[in-house]
Image 1: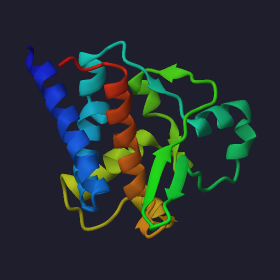
Image 2 (image 1 turned 180 degrees about the vertical axis):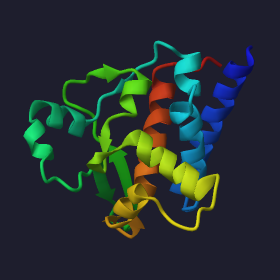
Image 3 (image 1 turned 120 degrees about the vertical axis):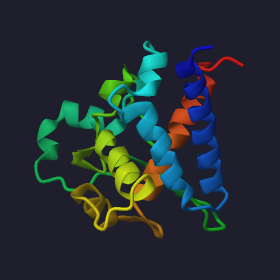
Length: 182
């Protein structure tokens, strides 16, 4: 096994563990999720496309909507890139909404999709959370996080459940697609 393959398998295990920790009540685990997402999708030579060059991810709903009607982005400040479910006991879960077409995208294209607003991409959100809250402690938020913090999903700033939704999607899709062999 190559170093990159070992790093990939470890990163996916850590990502899925962090998502599970968040879902069991450890809110701060979103920071760990962001670090693994950055490594897998956003670094200069991201790990996921390096070790799985043919791996594809599902296009998101809002990307498809804005491609079909680009004028909708004019004046649009916030988009909700998924679905928020709240159980009878008050537990909330946010999940990404996939495009109806089922179109697949390479990871480098996938992270360029609009997310939270037409001007914030997946890449910008992941990098912002990882760089400003997880691997570093900057004294101030950048504009991406300022904008994300203006919207709440139940009782959390939108970037927190959004990062978890990205991580959960990636864990589920990698498992369901058989991308990692035992």
